[in-house]
Image 1 (cartoon, rainbow, N blue to C red):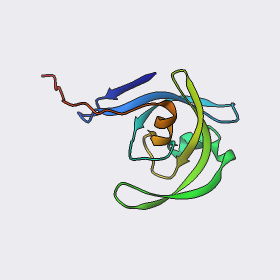
Image 2: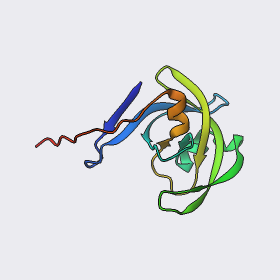
Image 3: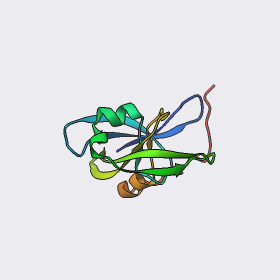
Image 4: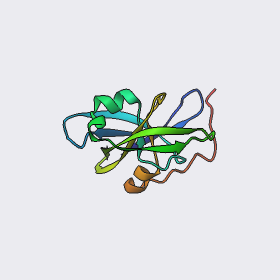
Length: 126
């Protein structure tokens, strides 16, 4: 399993490398997902990724979500298969306009048995 911190200008983003696949098994992408423990869904991907994988062909009813700053957005929703290391399972996949970075949320973290423990100290190399 590949989970690590990525130094994005000293923010140390917790990321996990995973393969995202359409349930139709015809397309897949290996991606880095930012771990977002505030997101209760499965995965959130850019609209272009959602369309490239053909997830729009498997859409379920849209859902509304509230962002961290309180804005309500409407999300397109589908199902997708996520593979993290040797684990593979179906999860909810969401998208909307403006999504830039793929996120992995608590639905997937729970299924994968991942627990996020932030660093207790930050070491900055000089």
